[in-house]
Length: 359
Image (cartoon, rainbow, N blue to C red; front, side, top):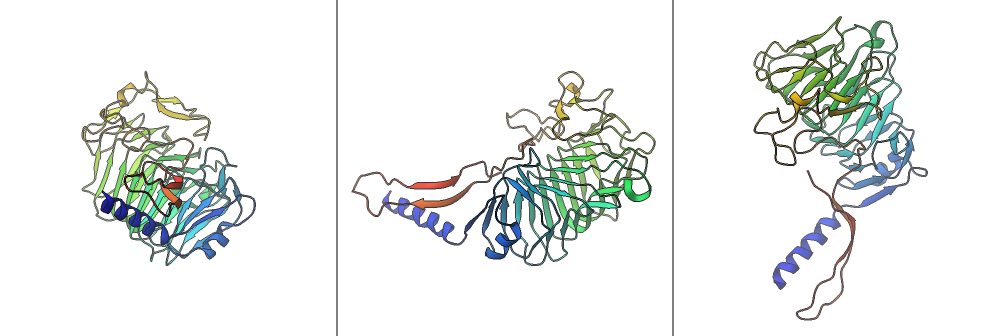
């Protein structure tokens, strides 16, 4: 037992000695200055507030905000660019609202990026891509991607929520919403991928859903589609070997796939089709009456947290969407260990940090 305790203690201390926790109060320091001070592998904790800046990352960091339930909670008013050197970065609990296109740009030299519990939106009045990605692997989990500009005219109503130049992308338990009201083509997922998996997502306001080029593995399961633009509703283009399975829609039926559910009514608790998606107002939980066909209707191999068959949409599966975006990332900030312990006594270690599901 003594040997085991010693090993665990040494392992914990070793894990903490290679990274630093940098705290950024929302009213005092910029995120960029924290990045510049940090070493690769450090964790940056953001306090509540609005950070008005355009960020350029060149280091691997864990960036943890305090959630996105309100704009004032933890908000970046600007663009986030991940450049060479930032491979392996994880970002969580942050609200990004950019006034122009390309809210996030991930360069071609960057790999293994994880985005969790984020809200990414724009107010672009021209052609817009929320997340521009090039290569490598990208995980988008429990996020809301919103194109909120509802003006008119030309390209001002065309938006891609994600555009890839060849990366391997997994999108899970995400909301993908478009507030546009015209029939201009709008492709939610655009570009070329080495592989693309979309699971337990809710799409509202789609026009031309997919603009996928080339031949690569593409699978979409356990998703819900609602509020199609009826004057221009289309599933778009996708690889010939694609799989669309266990999905449901109130609009157009996918031309491929199996186990599809055609919905007669709005399946959500609260969604105003006239107003489109409204963050903090719309409620995309499944209505127990109109959305009953989507409950326990997912792939039998995908289970919800309670062990039942997965519901369709963002609240199904093992990592359901969290409306507040509150972070749930475990870390140890500090350990206080006594200098000695008597034989047979208990080793009392005091720690500061957060314990959470590591998902």
